[in-house]
Image 1: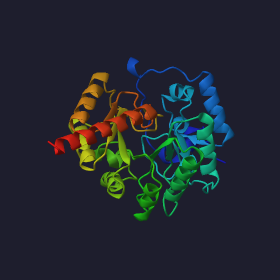
Image 2: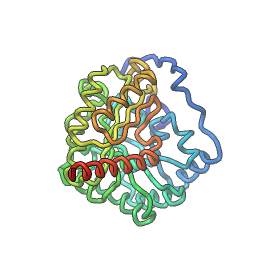
Image 3: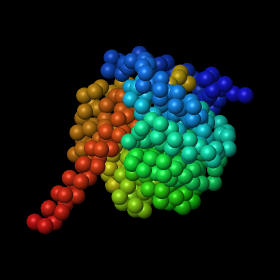
Image 4: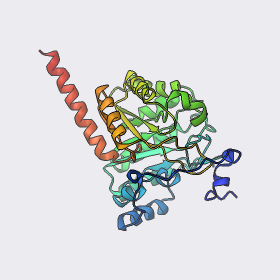
Amino acid sequence: MRNLKNPSERHPEKAHRPDNPQPKKPDWIRVRAPGGKGYAQTRRIMREHGLSTVCEEAGCPNVGECWNLGHATMMIMGDICTRGCTFCNIATGRPDALDLFEPGRVADAVARLGLRHVVITSVDRDDLEDGGAEHFARTIRAIRHRCPETTIEILTPDFLKCTPDALEAVVAARPDVFNHNLETVPGLYPEVRPGARYFHSLRLLQRVKEIDPAIFTKSGLMVGLGETRQQVLQVMDDMRAADVDFLTIGQYLQPTSKHHAVDRFVTPEEFAAYESAAFGKGFLMVSATPLTRSSYHAGDDFARLRIARTRQLTAGVQGGGA
């Protein structure tokens, strides 16, 4: 049996890769070690319900802060991914069969945590005909039934090998936010995200809006992988052409020496400039800081996102009546 705590067993596809030195983090990246009563309670609830979280599996630097507030991003369909992205710390291999009772346990955990907004993500499941789309839909419906006042944000895989009805099934379950991360600029895909296709991911986000314009769409980028500023700005333009509402940008942090190297640490001032540029391009909501992650402060950001859309619609009505 594999020991997923051992990096060589966790990432067998990376064993042949040369070691990349892990640079010392600058002061603006440092975070406190996880701990506190809220953290312990969140951890206990996750364990009692037999649930995985991307917070732990991906080694998120914000896990201490978020779990102390009772916020955990639940990762469905297991803790083993069928892809081998060079930036990602989630274990790679052949996943187990789907747990049909998992949607109910997720819904119960959401109720126990008292969440007003929940983020649900998953591993890639290329072994499944629908990529796990129906399991996503069942999870959304279970949360709606158990916690009707909770808003739901999903962070999905790309459903690259699936027929179009896979995405349609997820959208039909009506999540409040549909997030799919582009992760990096297209020129770095062969090295950073070799199992994915940039324009497929972009089209996925566009199709969500075509199927249901009321759903907020969201996508994220990591920087510090070797991209240029102009490439990042071009991705922003691509996202806006696909009608993406919400952009997140955060610093890439190298999980182990076998993962993609950190090219550089982007300064807080550069992140502020990216945020300003993104708002200028028409995004309703932007979060761009070194420690920004897809679900970081997701509940507060969702509230601001709804306000921004209301203002946009109000301005459009007033402008049309002028």
